[in-house]
Length: 228
Image (cartoon, rainbow, N blue to C red; front, top):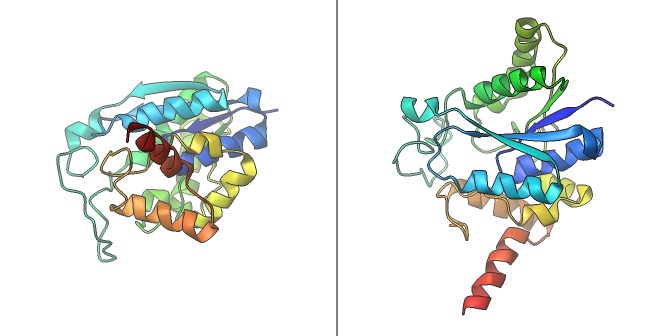
């Protein structure tokens, strides 16, 4: 069976995709890759490492700090996170070109490791409307990578048309909930999560609509009770 490389951010969506890839390609054929891109909150890299450990897959972190040098967004700069959704413009959590760069580096990594498939947890149904999360963008990039590397690499985005409730239900079906307890979503880098930023609110909405308890919140509550 062919191999797959999962771009693992340590978040809810990429964790679901990791378990999707294991189910699709077989455990022994799946590895994961994270990027230290100069993000303010390194907790997401710790989460990615823990998720990969629970899933028992190979995990590597590549350093690419150019995004912090470019700046201009709330995920790499000391800029206050926009707490309100504004359909008129992209939120300040948008890191221009991030997914394009991630997938290009992932494709280069895959090329040198004889991996044919890339898996990424983007969804064009997300509130933010990031242009590098859209199906057309990924289709175009896939063709560019094939031409530029003379490869047959395929980009898989299994969550592309799912909402957050659908993703929660898929995670349950795939057996990802143990790992989900160690994921990180909060834009403010807090654990327990702030439950106020758009990322936290969107995650909470998905679990609520799926009528399933968020294992991350339950884990944080458990340890909070121990300290009380």
